[in-house]
Length: 152
Ligand code: FES
Ligand code: FES
Image 1 (cartoon, rainbow, N blue to C red):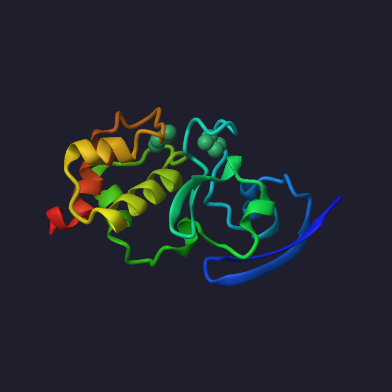
Image 2 (cartoon, rainbow, N blue to C red):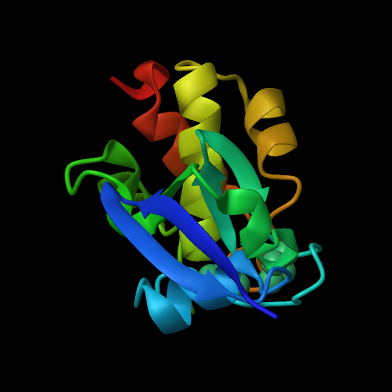
């Protein structure tokens, strides 16, 4: 069984018929070709698939496409090229293999949208659902701090 579904990804309208429980993660990658969003665990544990849904951070591996109808999705590709997080992650060594990076940046963007000048505790809390096996987190936290108004 499929259902009609219409939603917006990075400003473009997507229409299609999908199995209602198909994961947003799979639709983004296979149908919309926004492949920055990564699958790590597939179980809501790692945050590598994080995107914004109506501005709220979600793990797209846990979101059935039926829940996305009439809503707005933003992936890493939908952030402006001059988002300060990009340069900050590069400058601070906040990325190595890069699998966690898209989700990490989306989580950081959600934080900075709510809290433009977070302290370290708030940064750690906001990124607690995003796992990184490479960097040791120090560079990631430094990058988010540099991209915040604190870093200006
Ligand atoms: S792949 Fe979605 S949380 Fe890990
Ligand atoms: S940079 Fe490799 S998992 Fe984070």
